[in-house]
Length: 105
Image 1: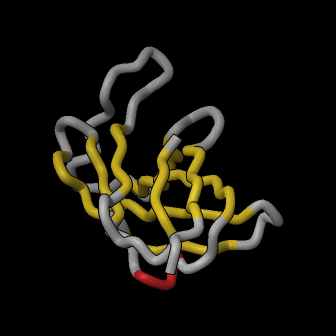
Image 2 (image 1 turned 30 degrees about the vertical axis):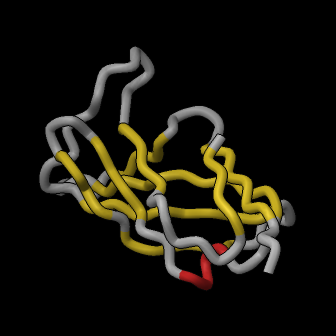
């Protein structure tokens, strides 16, 4: 589970794109988007993400203040579009569980 407080933009959310066997997928030459929805399946985030290492399959999304301005439970995923236009979503099963907590002020 990824946790942060309302209005925080650090740390970034990151992950490794892995196949069903847990092996990192080479995403060099691909593009990546991060998607996050709230508990009512409303889209909160649908923005480009950063490829940290294409060969290692590591990706990162740097939060905008508006992304984290509401406390609650969310689900996220990274969507990879390969150079041949095929699409694969990570994690392949389930979602990244995200919890944004209220802050004191």
